[in-house]
Image (cartoon, rainbow, N blue to C red; front, side, top):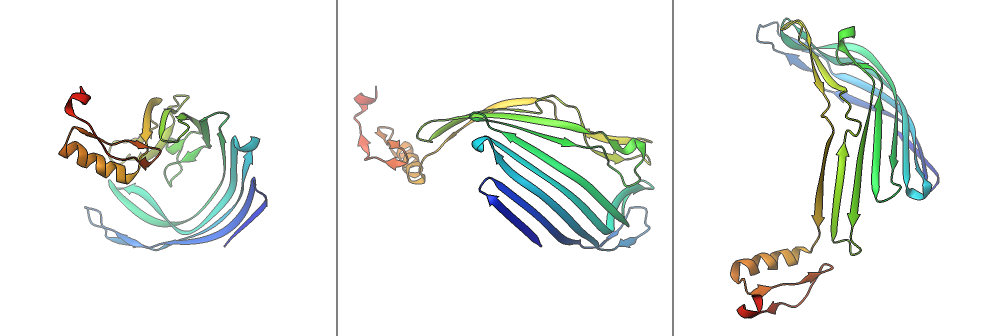
Amino acid sequence: LQLDYKPNSDTLLYAGINRGVKAGNFNAPLGGSFSTYDAEVLLAYEAGAKLTLMDGKAQLNSSIFYYDYSDYQSFSWVNNAGVVFNEDAQFTGAEVELLLKPIDALVSGSYQSEAFHNARNFTAHTIESHFKADARITWTDKEDLWSVAAYVDNLTDSDHELIGFDVSGFYGNSQISYAKPRTYGFGFIIKFCLNCLRRLMFLFISSPALKLLCIGGNCLDLIQLRPEQLL
């Protein structure tokens, strides 16, 4: 059940209740001890808002949610084997996302509060709170045929934790996966009509003395040039 309300073109308010089911299955570790686990049932309550600000140059999305699990399928390592078992669980949280586009660029950021990566919730299983920001800038020509973009991911070079595994049964510790360091790069996009592409492929294969002009997605007449004109 989902309810949406738009008081104006720049504002969306919503609230919803959703139910989901994940099928049960069985554990079959190498050492034996075959066991089954039940289906997981989730009731999810969520409310939030999506706001367009600064004449479309900013987007603010926010939400609060409460997840009520029955027979949550919890994963843990037991006797050096991965085992799923059922537990009742609740999860409460909030999300805030701000997208800025003051020029032909985009800056986005996200924040995650402290959490545990294991159902036992030991101190060693804590993932610390962190903030992550990305940036991207794009240039597009007037005909919208060419675009060039540059980006920076993990702008602050945060080394926050992403996920962890309790492998104390193997090594006596936990394994942690960390975020990628700051990365940057660029790319470009060229748009043209599919018909032009097909004709171009045919021309390059059949005769290098033929050229095809394609402007604004409209194919012009085929122009045949003499070999001396190509020099």
